[in-house]
Image (cartoon, rainbow, N blue to C red; front, side, top):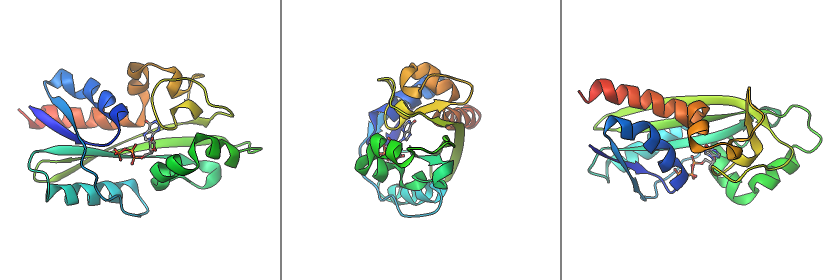
Length: 184
Ligand code: ITT
């Protein structure tokens, strides 16, 4: 089976393949910009995007909406992560946290799969924000996020290591388990 992953982010594709290819699911990137509405939760953003795409894409597809939630910033950038990454960037986030002791944060990911109906899968990983960027792997905020129980940032890990513990890895794992049951 071939499944379209609607995303502009090749890093997400690489992570999804690791979970879905072992099931015999071939993941391909579909670049189809869709509206990311302003809403309070990633679930609402993912659901709106998936329903909008459902009217325009014929094949089954999935998308992923993610965000970095920093506790000292009351969850910012959260649902605004993509915009903040493009505008303030990693350095902007580090500036906002200058002198702040509580560096705790979490990443959350919502995978929305559309097969004529909507199915949502979520994953979350806690950790902390570093004081400087470290590592060259991954994408986005990976160089400044150290997951709980580790000393390395996501950008200092291989895709496999990140995938084992990450928000997206958990959402993809739930999606893969669901597919295994439902594609029989
Ligand atoms: P899409 O086309 O799939 O929307 P995107 O990169 O814009 O790609 P999101 O809308 O989900 O993704 O935006 C989330 C932002 O948070 C974006 O800037 C990402 O770089 C960042 N982000 C998401 N997942 C991440 C991860 O696993 N590690 C680091 N940063 C991440």
